[in-house]
Amino acid sequence: MKWYANEKIQGKQDYNMADAMLSFVHKHNIQVRGHNIFWNNPQNMPSWTRSLSPAQLSSAASKRINSVMNQYLGQLIHWDVVNENVHFSFLENILGKNASAIYYKKANEIDSKAIPFLNDFNTIEHEFDGTSNPSKYLEKIRDLRSHGYNGPLGIGVQGHFVKPNLPYIRSSLDMLASAGLPIWITELDVANTTNQEVYLEEIIREVHAHPGVKGIMIWAPWGPKGCYRMCLTDNNFKNLPTGDIVDKIIKEWSHQGFSGTTNENGIFETSLFHGEYQVEIKHHEKQTYASMAQKVKVAAQKDGTRENSHYTIFV
Picture 1 (cartoon, rainbow, N blue to C red):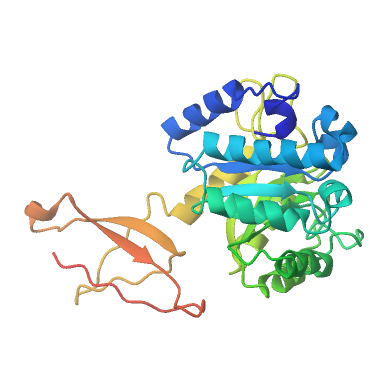
Picture 2 (tube, rainbow, N blue to C red):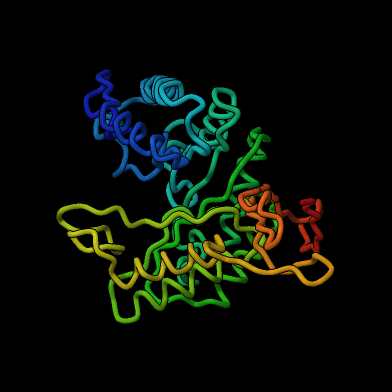
């Protein structure tokens, strides 16, 4: 859905590839994030945009955001509106300091159900990039607000790791969470080095444990020539060690196959992650209830703190 893929030649839009991909994943009930409307790194904008005057770029950008967002209206959960605008400033340099704010506001007006996200790298990965550390990221959020965008907003941190520094990840997420906005790990991968799968598991468990993190996406799309940095399977779609880690964690977190027995008072206690569960109740004596199922939703208290909840299921 990137601009350079949808409009290689100015004025000639092509959504065929993105349409086909979106249709495929929706058939499998997979939610989709829009990535991205604009990319503030000039090297990742359509080549023809780099020679436009401010007025021409403003016109082209307006057509772009209206076109792509209406093409996928109501079909996406998020949009990375101006990708990597903590690191880069192509739109601001040409259109003014309020450029990002204008497009976040426009995105929210077009599709209020898709949360507009920032999305950047080297915020939680390590402490060596002074351009996009948590403090700078929060500064960018304040900048958007000061230039007039006061609508919904999400914090996207890409998560391209080499060797994780878990305390730094935790403290960075703490800082970002102070903004009170949903945090997503949007492009999680680990460099293909020794201990890749070990590091992957450490990172996934660390970010999942943080109450501010609302979603994790792994950046491992397979291709016949390999993956960007991390594959989960080989070319025959057999799990690699990284894939084994992901499958293990998904099974653990979803409680697949988990079962238990109530005590003499009909009580069963366990710990569950927040989310929705389908509970199947079997009665050893009353065969009528052998296939009875009910849904249970486990959630936090309104202030976000953990809660010990008791759910009563009548049989």
